[in-house]
Image (tube, rainbow, N blue to C red; front, side, top):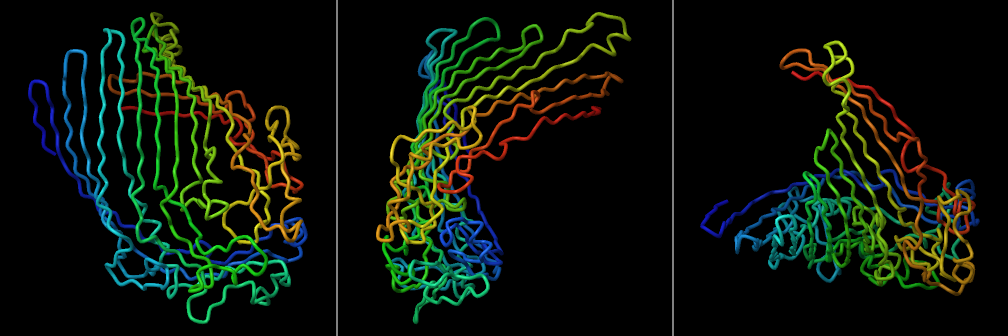
Length: 531
């Protein structure tokens, strides 16, 4: 980095080069999988007891794959002191993530039109180069008065694709072949005792691989976020101040698992209806086509040490909207061809949050004799108080109402505005079941193959209230030696914070809360010697 300073400008420019290498010797289900969801008997535990699964996946060998990429960046920035009251920061950054490539050649992926499988060789890249990652940024600070400051800024930020996604390419043929077999109406039931007894449930192809194929798209854009913010800071009495903050962002080119060889809703065996006839099984494309939006407002009061007390109290309102988690986190929309039906409250969308902290030097016997001062002086109390609203949850069906074997969560039809009382006096049956229905969908109505019209994450679970407290004392042993005794308790009042309810419709546990989101009171003592 180089820097030049003049009377009003401070200009900096620099670059960085980073190589990231990731290795993986694993498959998602090395021992295979069996799925029991109530499709056969109407009750998942009964399906399990009968050994009648709705789908199964075969085991796969653990082949070590190693991938790498360079993440390079170049930037220039100017801090301009426009006047005594106004300061500007503006700059430009250029991100250059190089094409991810295989180090040892243990990978295979589909070509651009997904018509054939390419077996890699050491050093081969997976995607098209990305050379348009320009990231301008600007910020300012304006001192309205000596006690009032207004700040703001905006910028574009890039986050290169995670290399872990490319390590999945060692699970493709010829390195590994994992078959995914799914039961469809009209076929004999699948049985644990003889899983391969129903060939029509498994993908078949006389010319191409039949197992799951994982692949990146050829044109895989770099994930990007546009962010903007503003704040107003006001100083009150000595050491005290209030800050009002606004923050917003729009993210796009976010990744997901796009199963683009999923058939459209309809009757018949799933594998025989897959659109890409070059491959008989599912194709998982790590696509970068999702979006997310975030907005928040915060009010923060800070009091620096005053008569031994230091405190901060903050309130935040925020709203996060997205489609699902990332591809490594299982991000898959219900309908792979219409992800907008899953756009809604994110899994971690917390609308209201209050946090208060304090540090208090307790004024016990500050001027007493040596014995009292040694025993009772220099105690300090610390606390963190957290209160937040509930997290959203998704009402699902547990059955394949579209007969597509989609990897996303199936949702029911919505009949009216959904309501719940979860955690607000109700732990059992806290979701109104009359708001949802699958009676008009397959398999209840054999001819109506469709995804439900209910939105994602429509309801919210219980909030959380928690108080953590600690008490400590320093014993001065020598000029440079002291011993600290600590008493700490987490969840001081042992308040029960309940988790979200079970939300699979037409099950005995629907609307029931059976666990806590955080543990019960925890008390611990500790000691630390400083020297």
